Structure formats: structure tokens, C-alpha cells
Length: 163
Ligand code: FES
Image (cartoon, rainbow, N blue to C red; front, side):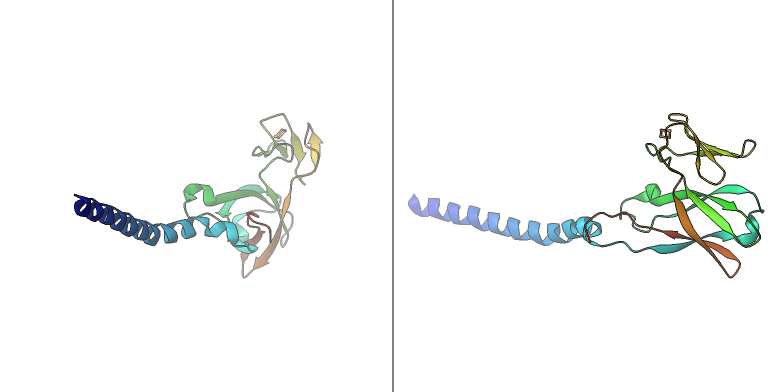
């Protein structure tokens, strides 16, 4: 009776041990993969957002680009956007779409030459400065450059961990 009992306990302990090793072997890489973005410091990335001639002088248009620090499972949310304005033959300005009040996406009204925020009535001029409403400061701007006939934006990754 005690021999059968100790054999049973041995088999239970062996099965628990094997199960634990198998779970660790499978789970460790998965957990490491899921947590890795939090320990990687994102770098700034220049993103190609289109040809110079795709936008006329004085025109403002919405552009999209991939966030430089997307999580592996981000899917469509890895896409970010900005408002690109051509101010001269060779100069561009890019504004973040997020209102500086509480972050709602602003819209460009070309007829009025204003950015409008639908959440609390924030209004910005075409140069991104505040025209009316609660926003405390101008729209955030991206650094823009032109290279080989293309427009590029300097995008910044999200700070997920202290660096
Ligand atoms: Fe834009 Fe409040 S979030 S005005």
C-alpha cells in the first residue's frame, strides 16, 4: 500500500516537474517577446511621406506614416498621421494632428484656413498657433526635410521605459 502510494506521489511530482519545464520552455520566449518593446529605447526615424510635387505651395494635406516604435501587435494603430503644409517651393511644415488641449485629432478646413478641434472648439491658424478655444499652446511640429524629390518627417517613438 505505501509502495503504491509513494510511486503515485513520485509520478505526480515527475509530471508536475515535466509540466513546469515545458511551460517555462514555451512561455519564456513568448513573455520576452511581448515585453521587449518596453525595454527598447525607440530612436527617431525619418519617414518618407511623399513626393515634393504631390502638394502645391500653400496647400495643407493629411499624411500618414508608420510609428517608429510600434508594438508587434499594434496592427492598424501603428499608423500615425500629421498635417503637411507646403509654405514655399522648398519649404514644408508638418503639424501633429493632436490638439494641444486634450489630444483630439484636429481637422483642416481649407476654406477658412484653420485647424478645428471637434472636442471643445479649439481653433488654430494655418501656422499652428492658437486662434481660439482652450488649447494652451500651438500645434506640435515635426522636423521636415526634402531629399531627392521626396518629403521626409522626423518621427519620434513613444517613451515606454526610462532611458
Ligand atoms: Fe481640442 Fe479640447 S481637445 S479643444
